[in-house]
Image (cartoon, rainbow, N blue to C red):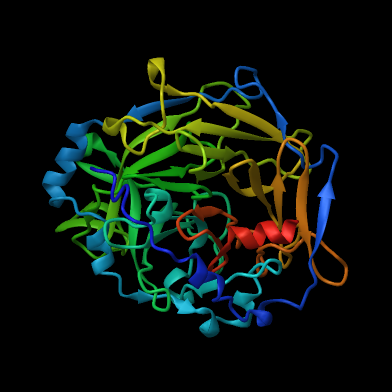
Length: 441
């Protein structure tokens, strides 16, 4: 479908948002921020050639056959769009004042969030939070049609770890909360299950993925996949959302219709990007959109544990300018998308990546279950992180609340409002990119 609202007059929100800083002192001890600079190779980026073994990461594009999708639609009913899902959004997100002390403890210490909300514990029990993207990624005017929208990814079991509330169930599933953000004081959402068509489009299975990375660009949603999957990214079409017709814990075709594990909607994948074969091939674990490049680009980071004997790699992929390929990566001969830039950094445990202009922002995971992570801004010459607290620690970013799997760390920049959105535990929060840069000096 068409790319919504290009060239529409942007709404001037920055001044309003800058004056709405939340009183989040319950979330953390009062701090005094200062600047930390690392001049050595610990965090600074080192460019690597995209044609070298270290920098080369081609992604082969594959499409789900159109006849599969048409067959599924003929069985399930005509696909709907985002606005239809938002019309059904009846689950409220609580404003920060209504969130528990434990939930607010996962918010950043420095700089502080200016907006924060929490999901209801009962509605997310058994699910682990994942990546965040917004209509600010989808379109440069920040809206999809007439709506401001936030997408929050969640994962249930089967993807390498427990949930926020007890042991992981056997079945792996992934779903997305479609959040109506038109009224910042009254956010509401509804769920859509992510699925993959099977049997020629006669059925679908749930997507098994931790959703550690997710980007909504034009009419496509790109999401990361699990470690043992040759597919690096799955592709969803935001104009091909299907209604589930049976309320059931099952997934796919059931007696009397179609089920989506209790969700009202299901998104069937329309394609994927596959990794090259061979042992030791890296994979994108965190992704985000960069609108400061021409063309717009998708940036990605792999996940490397702190005790690994190698550096973390980052890649940039150009997005297609072809209207017939809206929302997809730019590909060359053979349908392969090759990175246009690649870097290495000594920062490990990266769970979120963001690039804007000359800076790369990396969210390093907490080192302890109750700790906070570190947000770095890096370029080829330096790396900086905020210090906070009386001990001037760099662990000032969002964190977990008893389990390292609680935090997501995904970063998404809403250029029209100047805000960075992220998620930690059940908290969905935003703050101006300008406040991050000020804290970093």
